[in-house]
Amino acid sequence: MSNDTLFQEALTHFPGGVSSPVRAFRAVGGTPKFFRKAWGSRFEDEEGRRYVDLCMSWGPLILGHAVPEIISAAVEAMQEGLTFGAPSRRELALARRIKSMVPFLDKMRFVSSGTEAVMSALRAARGYTKRERILKFDGCYHGHSDAMLVKAGSGLVTFGEPSSAGVPRGFADLTTVISLDDLEALEATFDKLGHELAAAIIEPIPANNGLLVQDTTFLRRLRELCNAYGVVLIFDEVISGFRVAPGGAAELLGITPDLVTYGKIIGGGMPVGLYGGRKDIMAVISPDGPVYQAGTLSGNPVAMAAGLATLERLTPNVYRSLDQKGAQWAAAFEKMPGLHVPRVGSLLWPLFQPGVKRADRVESGAIARFNKMHGLLLKEGVYLPPSGYEVAFLSAAHGDEELAHVERAIGVVAAALKNE
Ligand code: PMP
Image 1 (cartoon, rainbow, N blue to C red):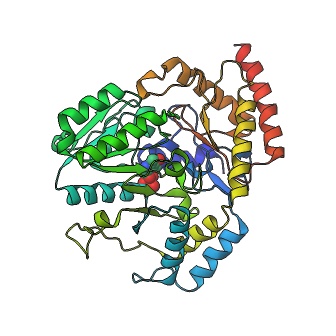
Image 2: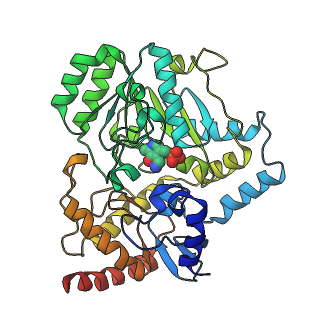
């Protein structure tokens, strides 16, 4: 069945025809593809067209699609029961593996999405500090809980609604937003509001308004200010966790947060999130403490098995190879005239503008050119995330053959763009 026919039906069921807005192709134009199967670094749509996937389900698939060992681990768990709603040994195995990769994580809680992880970490920080205000940074996306939908990047910036409707003013008023890469604003905000802040939350490698790589000095200063004012520093590593290094951005940058949130990779493609960190803060969580947080499917055995099978395969060699690939693929994209590709390891941001560090510096013309390039690359069998504000993801399964395919496609698209 054609993508168009499927999308026409989807429009009758779902707002915008999709289960999550960034899938809608509104920014880049055209009809979203409906996928029927995926393997390695490729997938096939319902019309039988195949693509090299550079979105990779937005990050979980660091080893590739449908990795046989991950699927077997999930199937083995499934055969023993889909969910217990009670403790199981697989939660312990995954927690042990995570602690071996992230040494500062004293205690953690599994949840079912990145959104939940962030929402819960913020509640823990508020319960611990007995303060209410949260500091976030313009362009960082932290999921769709009310407090975080203010200048939030991702689908919000894609659709030109940087702060969501439907959030009570009282909630939004408790979220202070400042720009990334602005030390002066950071100092001034702590000076004025430091004693009111429960938490400062940041993507240490901001990857939801493009890839706004920060100077380490900015993040170090944020750490110092949080210490000075007793503010809980939360690193949202839903994208960077287990991707840029075994211990995520915290390890790469040498900065330890008080709490951290993960999602995506730790579920190996199944719905999982996690928040955790210092044991004195995590002691406020129910039933040990007064901050309530719960979940019927939290620690789901199938998700735990898929996550563990993924993390067990993340060896130093995998990280070395992902970084080399990142360099090669970025160089391939930079053959497109005018395109720059800021990169951290296997996270790439193709942008028709030299790299920027702040959300408000991304030019609309650069995004318009991306949108054009997106459609042309798609015709050549290359699937980038359908928004110029989103980063591309590589996996261990992206090989030389796929790179050659993409290089050819870039040549074709560069010629087409030149002739316009
Ligand atoms: N935090 C960050 C940094 C994210 O990138 C995302 C999702 N892209 C989330 C939180 C929310 O995760 P989820 O979509 O699983 O709710």
